[in-house]
Length: 147
Image (cartoon, rainbow, N blue to C red; front, side, top):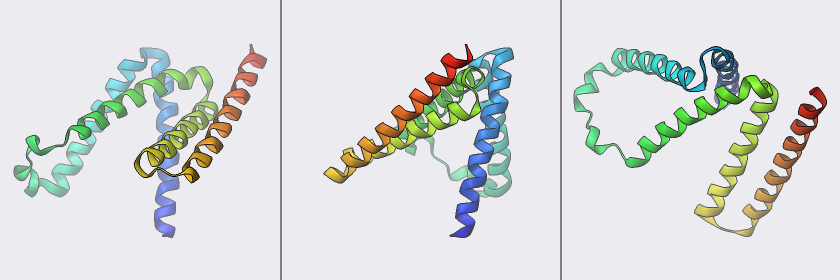
């Protein structure tokens, strides 16, 4: 379990670093071109990893068996990179990251409410909404103070 916690924390640091790098790139070439570079390099990197570790299984892959939600997930990932690359240079790494995490918490609880129902999730949803509102107010206050 300790290893999984370490991997999750390391992943968060890598994601944050990537967002900062993509934000800087976005300031010079634009958010969608940054997203294109991000996904092109990521595609090449993953292609090399898959070719190195799973090359014997590549012939067994069937594109027709890929579920529709897998395609939607890829589109959501590309949209995430493009929008965060646009927002990061304007709001800063901390504010953007905290708002992204707030949005992730909100949608996670919402998905639990939809999939499982129950009032206990509604309390969690209210709690996440209050946290997110606090983050937004804090961000707006800093944004107006800096102007």
